[in-house]
Length: 280
Image (tube, rainbow, N blue to C red; front, top):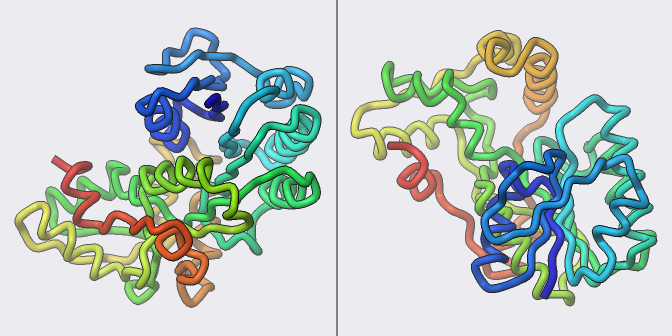
């Protein structure tokens, strides 16, 4: 079996490529850096705006894992259209697309909507993975350091806002399973159900770290200020804007009937299970 993985050196693509390579699949890792090294995979540098080159990379593949890189809205939309056109031209056996989370699919930006709509219109066998917020966000230094050193888990959501947290590893598990389940089409949501509030998340940190941890909600603007030295002002401002929007919603929870647990029999990692491996 042959698979093409977008962003195979990044947070979402890396575990997908690794899981497929581990079972002996032939994996092509699409990257923007021709010198990248991906264990068990052939690396192929492709410009996401180059439709013909993408189609050549997809052609003959049993499966393609797609997600869009972070970028400006116009660049993301251009990449989305290029990817959809290439998929239509190459006609791989199966496509799995991750929305990369953040917001519900119905509130996604134009680029994500373009890929979802394009896949629906293509007639290709496909599924759409829709996480919400990633547990790996909690490894950002302002978040994990506060929990570890000050006993304060600071995050820009109200304390009572439940979140269906998911790991990048949960997304990878779902992607690999979906490649083998062509009978499953449409939307598959990945994350915890029931969703977890901030204080419940702090309890998991306390259990892992061995000391009391209290949840402290931040304003999105304050969180953006903490991230600006790490991400740059523009990216941090975008993150703050996301949490401004999420704060207007009653929750960030998935629908259990569309969950990977229900559809694929894949329970997500609990916060404590994830923390056991992720936080030392």
